[in-house]
Length: 354
Ligand SMILES: Nc1ncnc2c1ncn2[C@@H]1O[C@H](COP(=O)(O)OP(=O)(O)OP(=O)(O)O)[C@@H](O)[C@H]1O
Ligand SMILES: [Mg+2]
Image (cartoon, rainbow, N blue to C red):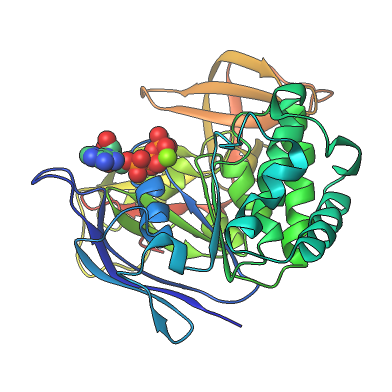
Protein backbone atom coordinates (compact mmCIF):
# COMPACT_ATOMS: atom_id res chain seq x y z
CA UNK A 1 0.00 0.00 0.00
CA UNK A 2 1.46 3.36 -0.97
CA UNK A 3 0.08 6.84 -1.37
CA UNK A 4 1.82 9.23 -3.76
CA UNK A 5 2.10 12.76 -2.39
CA UNK A 6 3.35 15.83 -4.24
CA UNK A 7 4.04 18.80 -2.00
CA UNK A 8 4.52 22.30 -3.46
CA UNK A 9 6.40 20.90 -6.42
CA UNK A 10 8.17 23.38 -8.71
CA UNK A 11 10.36 23.01 -11.77
CA UNK A 12 12.12 25.96 -13.30
CA UNK A 13 14.21 25.36 -16.44
CA UNK A 14 15.10 29.02 -16.99
CA UNK A 15 14.05 32.32 -15.35
CA UNK A 16 10.92 32.49 -17.50
CA UNK A 17 10.39 28.76 -18.18
CA UNK A 18 8.54 27.36 -15.17
CA UNK A 19 6.31 24.56 -16.47
CA UNK A 20 5.52 23.38 -12.92
CA UNK A 21 4.98 26.32 -10.56
CA UNK A 22 3.47 25.03 -7.34
CA UNK A 23 1.66 21.73 -7.43
CA UNK A 24 0.40 19.74 -4.47
CA UNK A 25 -1.74 16.65 -4.78
CA UNK A 26 -2.26 13.17 -3.40
CA UNK A 27 -2.99 9.95 -5.26
CA UNK A 28 -4.19 7.06 -3.12
CA UNK A 29 -3.93 3.34 -3.84
CA UNK A 30 -6.34 2.41 -6.59
CA UNK A 31 -6.88 6.03 -7.58
CA UNK A 32 -6.49 6.94 -11.22
CA UNK A 33 -5.41 10.57 -11.49
CA UNK A 34 -5.31 12.18 -14.90
CA UNK A 35 -3.24 15.27 -15.63
CA UNK A 36 -5.22 17.04 -18.33
CA UNK A 37 -4.22 20.22 -20.11
CA UNK A 38 -3.20 21.80 -23.41
CA UNK A 39 0.14 21.23 -25.08
CA UNK A 40 3.02 22.79 -23.16
CA UNK A 41 1.17 23.18 -19.85
CA UNK A 42 3.70 21.05 -17.97
CA UNK A 43 2.08 17.60 -17.88
CA UNK A 44 5.10 15.59 -19.00
CA UNK A 45 7.43 17.66 -16.85
CA UNK A 46 5.34 16.87 -13.77
CA UNK A 47 5.32 13.17 -14.63
CA UNK A 48 9.08 13.18 -15.23
CA UNK A 49 9.59 14.83 -11.85
CA UNK A 50 7.61 12.04 -10.19
CA UNK A 51 9.64 9.42 -12.05
CA UNK A 52 12.92 11.10 -11.09
CA UNK A 53 13.87 11.90 -14.69
CA UNK A 54 13.93 15.60 -13.72
CA UNK A 55 15.07 17.20 -10.46
CA UNK A 56 12.56 19.58 -8.86
CA UNK A 57 13.58 23.17 -8.11
CA UNK A 58 11.49 23.01 -4.93
CA UNK A 59 8.97 20.77 -3.21
CA UNK A 60 8.76 17.11 -2.28
CA UNK A 61 7.71 13.75 -3.67
CA UNK A 62 6.68 11.19 -1.07
CA UNK A 63 5.52 7.61 -1.62
CA UNK A 64 4.09 5.98 1.50
CA UNK A 65 6.57 6.91 4.23
CA UNK A 66 9.48 7.47 1.85
CA UNK A 67 10.65 10.88 0.74
CA UNK A 68 11.86 10.17 -2.81
CA UNK A 69 12.43 13.79 -3.88
CA UNK A 70 16.11 13.20 -4.59
CA UNK A 71 16.13 9.44 -5.14
CA UNK A 72 17.49 8.28 -8.52
CA UNK A 73 14.85 6.83 -10.89
CA UNK A 74 16.10 3.27 -10.31
CA UNK A 75 15.41 3.55 -6.60
CA UNK A 76 11.79 4.56 -7.12
CA UNK A 77 9.54 1.58 -7.53
CA UNK A 78 7.60 3.24 -10.34
CA UNK A 79 6.87 2.10 -13.87
CA UNK A 80 6.51 4.62 -16.65
CA UNK A 81 4.87 4.12 -20.04
CA UNK A 82 5.88 6.62 -22.71
CA UNK A 83 3.94 7.83 -25.73
CA UNK A 84 6.73 6.53 -27.97
CA UNK A 85 6.60 3.08 -26.24
CA UNK A 86 10.43 3.11 -26.13
CA UNK A 87 10.76 -0.62 -26.91
CA UNK A 88 14.15 -2.23 -27.64
CA UNK A 89 13.96 -2.93 -31.40
CA UNK A 90 16.51 -5.77 -31.41
CA UNK A 91 14.80 -7.73 -28.61
CA UNK A 92 11.76 -9.99 -28.88
CA UNK A 93 8.52 -9.12 -27.13
CA UNK A 94 9.36 -11.57 -24.35
CA UNK A 95 12.83 -10.04 -23.89
CA UNK A 96 11.38 -6.54 -23.89
CA UNK A 97 8.91 -7.44 -21.17
CA UNK A 98 11.58 -9.26 -19.16
CA UNK A 99 14.30 -6.59 -19.47
CA UNK A 100 13.64 -4.74 -16.22
CA UNK A 101 13.41 -7.99 -14.24
CA UNK A 102 16.71 -9.16 -15.71
CA UNK A 103 18.42 -5.93 -14.62
CA UNK A 104 17.11 -6.57 -11.10
CA UNK A 105 18.59 -10.07 -11.25
CA UNK A 106 15.25 -11.81 -10.79
CA UNK A 107 15.66 -15.62 -11.02
CA UNK A 108 15.02 -16.98 -14.51
CA UNK A 109 12.04 -19.25 -13.72
CA UNK A 110 10.31 -16.36 -11.95
CA UNK A 111 10.94 -14.08 -14.94
CA UNK A 112 9.42 -16.64 -17.28
CA UNK A 113 6.41 -17.09 -15.06
CA UNK A 114 5.76 -13.35 -14.63
CA UNK A 115 6.24 -12.62 -18.35
CA UNK A 116 3.83 -15.34 -19.31
CA UNK A 117 1.16 -14.15 -16.81
CA UNK A 118 1.37 -10.54 -17.99
CA UNK A 119 1.42 -11.59 -21.66
CA UNK A 120 -1.72 -13.60 -21.03
CA UNK A 121 -3.46 -10.63 -19.37
CA UNK A 122 -2.69 -8.37 -22.32
CA UNK A 123 -3.33 -10.90 -25.08
CA UNK A 124 0.31 -11.03 -26.14
CA UNK A 125 1.02 -14.73 -25.60
CA UNK A 126 1.14 -15.54 -29.33
CA UNK A 127 3.50 -12.63 -30.06
CA UNK A 128 6.27 -13.29 -27.53
CA UNK A 129 8.84 -14.32 -30.18
CA UNK A 130 8.28 -11.34 -32.47
CA UNK A 131 10.37 -8.18 -32.62
CA UNK A 132 8.66 -4.77 -32.13
CA UNK A 133 9.07 -4.03 -35.86
CA UNK A 134 6.75 -6.95 -36.62
CA UNK A 135 3.91 -5.61 -34.47
CA UNK A 136 1.01 -3.22 -35.08
CA UNK A 137 0.79 0.04 -33.15
CA UNK A 138 -1.78 -1.36 -30.75
CA UNK A 139 0.32 -4.44 -30.10
CA UNK A 140 3.44 -2.34 -29.41
CA UNK A 141 1.39 -0.27 -27.05
CA UNK A 142 0.41 -3.43 -25.16
CA UNK A 143 4.04 -4.54 -24.93
CA UNK A 144 4.91 -1.17 -23.37
CA UNK A 145 2.12 -1.69 -20.84
CA UNK A 146 3.24 -5.25 -20.18
CA UNK A 147 6.72 -3.98 -19.41
CA UNK A 148 5.26 -1.66 -16.77
CA UNK A 149 2.94 -4.28 -15.27
CA UNK A 150 5.51 -7.07 -15.03
CA UNK A 151 7.57 -5.06 -12.56
CA UNK A 152 4.69 -4.90 -10.10
CA UNK A 153 5.62 -1.31 -9.22
CA UNK A 154 4.25 0.80 -6.37
CA UNK A 155 3.14 3.58 -8.73
CA UNK A 156 2.19 3.65 -12.43
CA UNK A 157 3.02 6.68 -14.59
CA UNK A 158 1.68 6.91 -18.13
CA UNK A 159 2.43 9.74 -20.57
CA UNK A 160 -0.12 9.87 -23.41
CA UNK A 161 0.10 6.11 -24.01
CA UNK A 162 -2.75 6.05 -26.54
CA UNK A 163 -1.93 9.08 -28.66
CA UNK A 164 -0.19 7.10 -31.42
CA UNK A 165 -3.21 4.86 -32.00
CA UNK A 166 -5.99 5.51 -34.50
CA UNK A 167 -9.40 6.51 -33.14
CA UNK A 168 -11.01 3.05 -33.10
CA UNK A 169 -8.05 1.31 -31.56
CA UNK A 170 -7.70 4.08 -29.00
CA UNK A 171 -11.26 3.47 -27.85
CA UNK A 172 -10.61 -0.26 -27.55
CA UNK A 173 -7.31 0.05 -25.68
CA UNK A 174 -8.84 2.74 -23.45
CA UNK A 175 -11.47 0.25 -22.29
CA UNK A 176 -8.80 -2.39 -21.73
CA UNK A 177 -6.72 0.07 -19.71
CA UNK A 178 -9.65 0.89 -17.50
CA UNK A 179 -10.31 -2.74 -16.70
CA UNK A 180 -6.63 -3.45 -16.24
CA UNK A 181 -5.96 -0.67 -13.74
CA UNK A 182 -9.15 -1.35 -11.81
CA UNK A 183 -7.54 -4.62 -10.76
CA UNK A 184 -4.14 -3.12 -9.86
CA UNK A 185 -5.06 -1.11 -6.76
CA UNK A 186 -2.00 1.16 -7.09
CA UNK A 187 -1.78 4.93 -7.61
CA UNK A 188 -1.89 5.71 -11.34
CA UNK A 189 -0.90 9.07 -12.81
CA UNK A 190 -1.96 9.39 -16.43
CA UNK A 191 -1.10 12.28 -18.73
CA UNK A 192 -3.32 13.24 -21.63
CA UNK A 193 -4.65 16.23 -23.52
CA UNK A 194 -7.61 14.09 -24.63
CA UNK A 195 -10.58 14.94 -22.48
CA UNK A 196 -12.46 11.77 -23.43
CA UNK A 197 -9.65 9.72 -21.93
CA UNK A 198 -9.62 11.93 -18.86
CA UNK A 199 -13.38 11.67 -18.39
CA UNK A 200 -13.67 7.92 -18.95
CA UNK A 201 -10.57 6.57 -17.20
CA UNK A 202 -10.05 8.72 -14.14
CA UNK A 203 -11.26 8.71 -10.61
CA UNK A 204 -9.82 12.24 -10.32
CA UNK A 205 -8.73 14.79 -12.91
CA UNK A 206 -6.24 17.61 -12.37
CA UNK A 207 -6.71 20.25 -15.06
CA UNK A 208 -3.40 22.03 -15.57
CA UNK A 209 -2.60 25.41 -17.08
CA UNK A 210 0.48 27.59 -16.68
CA UNK A 211 2.12 25.15 -14.26
CA UNK A 212 -0.77 25.26 -11.79
CA UNK A 213 -3.69 22.98 -11.01
CA UNK A 214 -6.83 24.80 -12.14
CA UNK A 215 -9.18 22.19 -10.70
CA UNK A 216 -8.78 18.83 -8.97
CA UNK A 217 -12.01 16.87 -8.84
CA UNK A 218 -13.76 13.70 -10.02
CA UNK A 219 -14.49 13.96 -13.77
CA UNK A 220 -18.24 14.37 -13.30
CA UNK A 221 -17.69 17.36 -11.02
CA UNK A 222 -15.25 18.93 -13.49
CA UNK A 223 -17.96 18.64 -16.13
CA UNK A 224 -20.88 19.94 -14.08
CA UNK A 225 -18.99 22.53 -11.98
CA UNK A 226 -15.93 23.78 -13.86
CA UNK A 227 -13.93 25.96 -11.45
CA UNK A 228 -13.17 28.66 -13.98
CA UNK A 229 -13.66 29.70 -17.57
CA UNK A 230 -10.57 27.87 -18.78
CA UNK A 231 -11.74 24.51 -17.41
CA UNK A 232 -15.25 25.21 -18.72
CA UNK A 233 -13.97 25.77 -22.23
CA UNK A 234 -11.40 22.98 -22.17
CA UNK A 235 -13.57 20.12 -20.93
CA UNK A 236 -16.59 19.09 -22.96
CA UNK A 237 -17.16 18.37 -26.63
CA UNK A 238 -18.77 20.15 -28.34
CA UNK A 239 -17.33 22.99 -26.33
CA UNK A 240 -19.40 24.96 -23.82
CA UNK A 241 -20.90 28.19 -25.17
CA UNK A 242 -19.13 31.06 -23.41
CA UNK A 243 -20.63 34.55 -23.63
CA UNK A 244 -19.75 37.93 -22.14
CA UNK A 245 -22.87 39.77 -21.04
CA UNK A 246 -23.49 43.36 -19.98
CA UNK A 247 -25.21 43.81 -16.65
CA UNK A 248 -27.98 46.16 -15.55
CA UNK A 249 -28.43 46.20 -11.82
CA UNK A 250 -28.34 42.60 -10.66
CA UNK A 251 -29.38 41.24 -14.05
CA UNK A 252 -27.37 40.17 -17.11
CA UNK A 253 -28.66 41.04 -20.58
CA UNK A 254 -29.01 38.15 -23.02
CA UNK A 255 -30.83 39.03 -26.27
CA UNK A 256 -34.31 40.30 -25.36
CA UNK A 257 -34.03 38.78 -21.91
CA UNK A 258 -32.29 39.49 -18.68
CA UNK A 259 -31.10 36.86 -16.26
CA UNK A 260 -30.87 37.28 -12.49
CA UNK A 261 -27.22 37.20 -11.37
CA UNK A 262 -25.94 34.75 -8.77
CA UNK A 263 -25.48 36.38 -5.36
CA UNK A 264 -22.54 38.77 -5.53
CA UNK A 265 -21.08 41.25 -3.06
CA UNK A 266 -21.14 44.11 -5.55
CA UNK A 267 -22.87 44.95 -8.78
CA UNK A 268 -20.66 44.07 -11.80
CA UNK A 269 -20.64 45.89 -15.13
CA UNK A 270 -20.20 42.68 -17.06
CA UNK A 271 -20.29 38.97 -16.39
CA UNK A 272 -19.44 35.80 -18.33
CA UNK A 273 -21.75 32.85 -18.65
CA UNK A 274 -21.32 29.32 -19.95
CA UNK A 275 -24.04 27.06 -21.34
CA UNK A 276 -23.34 23.58 -22.63
CA UNK A 277 -24.89 22.82 -26.05
CA UNK A 278 -26.97 20.04 -24.48
CA UNK A 279 -28.49 22.51 -21.99
CA UNK A 280 -30.13 24.44 -24.82
CA UNK A 281 -33.27 23.15 -26.48
CA UNK A 282 -35.76 24.18 -29.16
CA UNK A 283 -38.16 26.47 -27.30
CA UNK A 284 -41.82 25.72 -26.68
CA UNK A 285 -44.55 28.16 -25.55
CA UNK A 286 -43.93 27.32 -21.89
CA UNK A 287 -40.22 28.12 -21.76
CA UNK A 288 -39.30 31.12 -19.63
CA UNK A 289 -35.84 32.00 -20.87
CA UNK A 290 -35.45 32.04 -24.63
CA UNK A 291 -33.05 33.51 -27.19
CA UNK A 292 -33.71 34.08 -30.86
CA UNK A 293 -31.35 34.05 -33.78
CA UNK A 294 -30.45 32.65 -37.18
CA UNK A 295 -28.57 29.42 -37.71
CA UNK A 296 -25.59 29.84 -40.08
CA UNK A 297 -23.94 26.42 -39.74
CA UNK A 298 -25.16 22.86 -39.23
CA UNK A 299 -22.74 19.98 -38.56
CA UNK A 300 -24.09 16.43 -38.70
CA UNK A 301 -22.59 14.06 -36.12
CA UNK A 302 -24.98 11.23 -37.03
CA UNK A 303 -26.55 10.83 -33.61
CA UNK A 304 -27.25 14.57 -33.46
CA UNK A 305 -26.80 17.83 -35.31
CA UNK A 306 -24.71 20.68 -33.98
CA UNK A 307 -26.27 23.98 -35.06
CA UNK A 308 -24.53 27.35 -34.65
CA UNK A 309 -26.90 30.26 -34.15
CA UNK A 310 -26.06 33.98 -34.15
CA UNK A 311 -28.12 35.68 -31.47
CA UNK A 312 -30.36 38.48 -32.77
CA UNK A 313 -28.93 41.94 -32.15
CA UNK A 314 -25.50 40.68 -31.06
CA UNK A 315 -22.43 38.98 -32.47
CA UNK A 316 -22.59 36.15 -29.95
CA UNK A 317 -23.03 32.59 -31.15
CA UNK A 318 -24.78 29.74 -29.37
CA UNK A 319 -24.22 26.14 -30.41
CA UNK A 320 -26.98 23.64 -29.74
CA UNK A 321 -27.39 19.89 -30.22
CA UNK A 322 -30.55 18.86 -32.06
CA UNK A 323 -31.85 15.36 -32.71
CA UNK A 324 -31.68 14.70 -36.46
CA UNK A 325 -35.38 13.88 -36.86
CA UNK A 326 -36.68 17.09 -35.24
CA UNK A 327 -38.45 19.73 -37.36
CA UNK A 328 -36.99 23.21 -37.05
CA UNK A 329 -36.28 26.38 -39.05
CA UNK A 330 -32.86 27.89 -39.49
CA UNK A 331 -34.18 31.46 -39.50
CA UNK A 332 -35.76 32.99 -36.45
CA UNK A 333 -34.97 29.96 -34.33
CA UNK A 334 -35.98 30.23 -30.68
CA UNK A 335 -33.89 28.41 -28.08
CA UNK A 336 -34.73 27.72 -24.46
CA UNK A 337 -32.05 27.83 -21.78
CA UNK A 338 -32.21 25.65 -18.71
CA UNK A 339 -31.59 28.32 -16.02
CA UNK A 340 -30.27 25.74 -13.53
CA UNK A 341 -27.51 24.77 -15.92
CA UNK A 342 -26.01 28.21 -16.48
CA UNK A 343 -22.40 28.53 -15.35
CA UNK A 344 -21.48 32.02 -14.11
CA UNK A 345 -17.92 33.37 -14.22
CA UNK A 346 -16.27 36.56 -13.03
CA UNK A 347 -15.56 38.63 -16.16
CA UNK A 348 -12.11 39.67 -14.89
CA UNK A 349 -10.69 36.62 -13.10
CA UNK A 350 -12.68 33.91 -14.91
CA UNK A 351 -13.46 32.23 -11.56
CA UNK A 352 -16.74 30.42 -11.10
CA UNK A 353 -19.38 32.40 -9.23
CA UNK A 354 -22.23 29.90 -8.68
N1 LIG B 1 14.45 20.13 -20.55
C1 LIG B 1 13.79 21.28 -20.78
N2 LIG B 1 14.44 22.45 -20.85
C2 LIG B 1 13.77 23.61 -21.05
N3 LIG B 1 12.43 23.70 -21.19
C3 LIG B 1 11.72 22.57 -21.13
C4 LIG B 1 12.36 21.31 -20.93
N4 LIG B 1 11.39 20.35 -20.90
C5 LIG B 1 10.22 21.00 -21.11
N5 LIG B 1 10.41 22.33 -21.24
C6 LIG B 1 9.37 23.35 -21.45
O1 LIG B 1 8.41 23.24 -20.44
C7 LIG B 1 7.11 23.45 -20.95
C8 LIG B 1 6.21 22.28 -20.59
O2 LIG B 1 6.63 21.14 -21.32
P1 LIG B 1 5.93 19.72 -21.13
O3 LIG B 1 6.65 18.77 -21.99
O4 LIG B 1 5.84 19.41 -19.68
O5 LIG B 1 4.48 20.02 -21.70
P2 LIG B 1 3.25 19.02 -21.92
O6 LIG B 1 2.12 19.57 -21.12
O7 LIG B 1 3.67 17.62 -21.67
O8 LIG B 1 2.94 19.25 -23.47
P3 LIG B 1 2.49 18.18 -24.61
O9 LIG B 1 1.01 18.01 -24.45
O10 LIG B 1 2.81 18.92 -25.87
O11 LIG B 1 3.29 16.93 -24.42
C9 LIG B 1 7.26 23.69 -22.43
O12 LIG B 1 7.23 25.08 -22.66
C10 LIG B 1 8.62 23.10 -22.75
O13 LIG B 1 9.21 23.77 -23.84
MG1 LIG C 1 3.89 15.92 -22.89
